[in-house]
Amino acid sequence: MAGCARGSARAVLAFLLAPALVALLVAPARGRGGRGHGDWGAAELLPPRENAALVARFVTNVCDWGALATISTQEGVRGRPFADVLSLSDGPPAKGSGVPYFYLSPMQQSVGNLKENPYATLTMSLAETSFCRKYGFDPQSPLCAHTILSGTVIKVSEAEMDVARNSLFIRHPEMKTWPSSHNWFFAKLNITNIWVLDYFGGPKIVTPEEYYNATFQ
Image 1 (tube, rainbow, N blue to C red):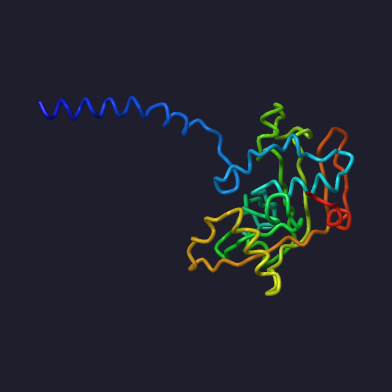
Image 2: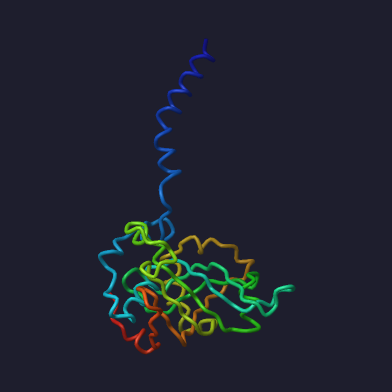
């Protein structure tokens, strides 16, 4: 009798919890380490496309991660392009510096590549946010704005260490708990070339000077 009662109680509990569990499973992933920043009103905040430098800064600040392309040193694919997804941050939301910071480990394949050849290209896209989903833009469409930054990846100096740490940990708090045995270090992309693709007709070229002088709010 007691077993039947327990079975009934479990059935009722499962019935009550089912809608919440389904909602969790089908809900879109949120950015900023679960803080929802990836779903903020990008549509309302997106700068005018005429200001390509500002669009580039905006995309860099909104994005939590990007695809970093390096030249492979791996056996069998040496010398070929090698892309990996890396978490990044240029600072707090709406207060970014424009400098993409990374938290890297020597155990990562990309880091091994960078030791031999520091040149890399980083691509970030508004496909990470709710903007493109809201307007039905395919991630490959130029209307789903993305920014391409090229340059060299270097370790940050001691003077810049706190800035890099605060920029990354405020957006990726989980990083604080990553195992120290992996010898994590802070790095940044020293930008030399910038392309912005936010409309038809090909990418717009932005100079680093224009990029860093753009006032982003």
